[in-house]
Amino acid sequence: MKRFFIRTFGCQMNVYDSERVSAMLTARGWTNVPEASSADIIIINSCSVRDKPLQKLFSCSGRFLPLVRKKGVKIFIMGCVAQQLGKEIIEKAPYISGVFGPGAEDMIPDVIEKGLFPFVSNSTDLLEREEIFPVDSKGNFFEQYTSSITVMHGCNNFCSYCIVPYVRGKEVSRKASSILEEIDILISRGVIEVTLLGQNVNSYKDPVTGMDFTELLYEAAKKPGLERIRFMTSHPKDFNEDLAAAFRNIPSLMPHLHLPAQSGSDRVLGMMNRKYSTVEYLSKIELARKHCPDIALSSDFIVGFPGETEKDFDKTLELINTADYDVIFAFAYSPRPGTAASQIADTVPEDEKASRLNAVLELQRKKIRKVRGRYLGRTVKVLVEKESPKSGTLMGRNEHNLLTHIIDATDADRGRIIDVRIDEILENTLRGKKNENS
Image (cartoon, rainbow, N blue to C red; front, side, top):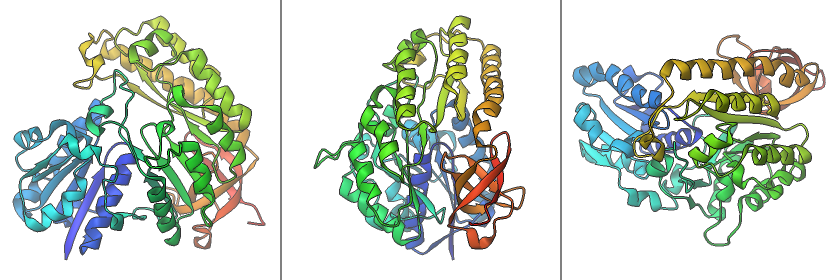
């Protein structure tokens, strides 16, 4: 038996890519195993957006070195670090057998079968392809009832701190017909919730028909059997009224919007090349809430950007306090090689970055009780997916994309969207019981 183990770091697009590679290998007779110690091939899907995932790549691969020496296991690196570093990975860690950038990951099965080790491919030309993965790789693999679809890859925004345009290439949109066919495949396999992915979905444009992202949402919503649609990520500068209105007009479009702010300071936003002001950002939130008053908001923030003063940071806290997010993801700035910001002196000391990060997270913890208090005693609709990792109850996500533990759900509820009355607001999740009529 041929066995592979795959470990994924980073964003949902990396998860999607891992899913495609897993599907291709399975089609070639390989079996996915839950433990690296049982595998013949170990694949690490890497992330280079921040410094810590980059460090994790080498610490993670190093832990598998004994398997290489004792059992002859092959280790492959895919994802953004593979694109960024290429052959430098093998120079630094010669026990690694393959390096595959995001445009080359479809080569993995053939490289294994042909024994072309060590293999390195991080050609930027491959990122220009509209379809990276073959048709037979499409479909759900990791989850039974939910799945993601990449509608576009790459980014043209060149935010000064971000390495994505350098490792994922320029924006390339897939044909709407291909995306809709992929949705059909997922529905045929029992998927009822789909998340449409892109570095900036607002920039999506069908290369044949010119269909924009909002139009694509309306087309996806026509699919019988597709009960829920989500998407991420939207760039604030491009979020518009048509897309906001879709939350009102499409019943299957779930009321959750991820709108990364990154900073509450206009001065810092300018240095970040974000192309909007705080006032403009807040106007986009107002636009979303005008059409969907109960929409849940999530956002990303970077603290300690070069030149960020205490006054700048205070404005970030002010924005968080004003926006009433359900969820935020906050990170201390770390320079990424090749980006414009990496050429600016990193003026904020590491201990100050840590202090500011803690302040952001503490403020959000305080806000959660107020913002999520609106769910207490309320009935929400939850897609029951799987067992909770600690409590033994079943869990899933409600309309607003919040993990919800259902105390009395049974295996018969898996794959169903049921009514759950929320009795408890936890730090990161909700908890409740089924309504009697569910």
